[in-house]
Amino acid sequence: MSEVYLHVGPVKTGSTYLQDLLWANRQSLAQQGVLNPCEHDNEMWFATNDIQDGAFIHFDMPEAEGAWGRVRDRALAFDGSSILSHEVLGLSTDEHVSKIAASLHPATLHVIVMARGLAAILPSLWQEKVKMVDPDVGWPEFVEEQHRTGAPWTDASRIVSRWLKHLPASRIHVVTVPPRGGDRSLLLRRFTEVIGVDIMDWEAGGDAANESLDAVQSELIRRLNQVTSEFLDIRAQRRLVNRAVLPLMNPADPGRRRRLPVTARHWVDAETTRRIDQLRESGVVIHGTLDDLEAPEDAWDSSGGTVTETDLLHEALRLLAASHPDRAPQGRPQRGRGLA
Image 1: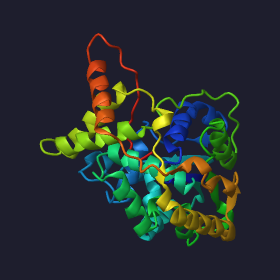
Image 2: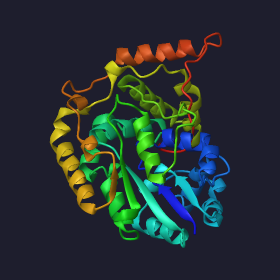
Image 3: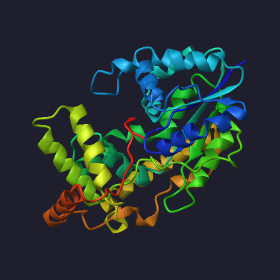
């Protein structure tokens, strides 16, 4: 009987890091009886868009047609465990979840949901949307929008509630994302604990993880998106940002890290408490600790988070200088797999 572990994100919870390691170490997985059923490292992006009928992308993707069925068939044909992973599966509606669950029958299905603190995920989500040119919205407006909507893209408890309609709580695994600054491999250990594999011989990998931008860098890209929207389509804009601009950027300056406005603290703390309580009461299997979802004291910005025009000019000039052919780029490897 086939067994499928379906990792559904959500976005900005370390998915690219984990997927890179799953791909780099697929031979080790195979030796331990676990199949990665994708034929190339972008196939799950196509498969995800296929099963969701392209609901979360803004352009035609003919490469996606039939991709879910091909990946699914390989997993169901395998007499053992398979791992499927894409963070955009976390955006799935109730209808999508029903469709996914039905498509994987009769395999024994386990779902892996990542849970990350709201105060940590919001700045990360905003900068990713800026990099993906989706949408062009300023940081204060973005925070207000998340307050108004309840930040659904970031909510592991909502994803869990959808899947509880199809699976017992014992087959839904919530992996909490450790706070920034800790041992990065802890996330991998928690994740692979679910699958039950040994990672002692794994290649470190993870170099293509989505790296952070600081407040100045993300605002500069947002301004660039505004200008280029007048003469480039969205795919061309994304190529410009991800292939030409990001590889030239220095690592994010920790002193310019994007923080949440202190005025958002009340609703963020209240929403965090609700999510923790709902996950605890759901009865699903927790890998890590729900305390990881609490906002750290340094999450808040009382200064207004203003980026000056001088800051932007200096960053733009540095990028211009870095683009000179005699200057080796800093190197920010990027992969176009959606919101990771």
